[in-house]
Length: 451
Ligand code: NAP
Image (spheres, rainbow, N blue to C red):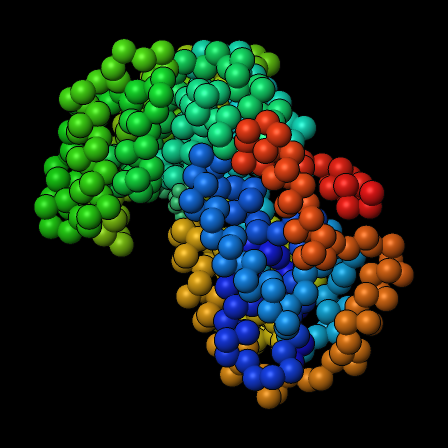
């Protein structure tokens, strides 16, 4: 059976792994990736000061060494390789492309200079080729990060870290240099709900308080729970919520300490406008109270109280968003490929033959890296249930694929090529006593491979 996997992040590799474990002999997996480098958000999203999380790529390396597996990097689906091509070459395709853009707030001033998506900043400091040429005005003293998820934690932390802390990471060299001159002293993290509803995890909120030159400031009244949250915590809160609350209360009691940078946690505030004539000068927020919604969760409801916080930089960190792929069904409202347990569902409501989906583009942008393992396994199980009824492709060979790519002038990157880039990055990093010096331009990667 020949399977194409589009995308090379965690869900793509876990799908390949489960196929390798479950499928009988005669399996061929070809993984296609738009960039020359694999691993999706593990390379381009995970914060540079979280090297242990990146260690998961050792598992992906093992999957890639399996005789069934080939990697084709620098191949864009829909352009270099279409769905029609895939249908001619494979029995099945698994789309595992993640969520490639960010959600917008839809408030006035969102397009001002200095207002950014957190995902752009994350891509920039991680040397992602799509974002490496962006600029961020780090001469500002105050910044706001909107949202209470782990991406908001990452962005606040990277803004507040010292060069000394970042030097030992694989942060992009140009980002390290720009952050060395950063004037940012105060980072406001704005949550629209209360501390008991924050989405960040205990390790991430604790880490904010363990930095070399930054401390966390939370006013005691900000962590005091409203009666609905109090009742929720007493009846139903899990360990994550309770630990988050303990950490925030400790911050409220201790204060930020005598440090040059502060992360100010604010709760129950929603941005209504980013103020400025050309560039960001302030953010206007409305104070919220919590009300129980129909599904029992506590949702924010605006009061009539406003506040303006002077900031020169804004990062909206309110979630990633999936993007439609050419010729593949897309649910615009949920920004996912419509599916039933991983089987792609067409406009007629029926499963599309041989088309599957895994990861964030299947379920939306939630969960940690490990969440993608059971998600991808479910998809592969459905594929294996269907495999006897999948029509044979007319050109079932790697030679046909490679001839097609060569005919279109596509310089694809193999897994061995990637391993060379990986070694080069590590060697260049070692010379500077850094774990690696990342390539950030596709042309530099290809030039390094072709010399
Ligand atoms: P997230 O966890 O879904 O958090 C999004 C945040 O944005 C929530 O606080 C949400 O508030 C808020 N929000 C949404 N719409 C808003 C609006 N209109 N105005 C104000 N706030 C709004 O998303 P994420 O931080 O992008 O993370 C994505 C996934 O990656 C998560 O599962 C996360 O855990 C994971 N991740 C993990 C790590 C790690 O393990 N270290 C690091 C980074 C990311 P509500 O709760 O009120 O909706």
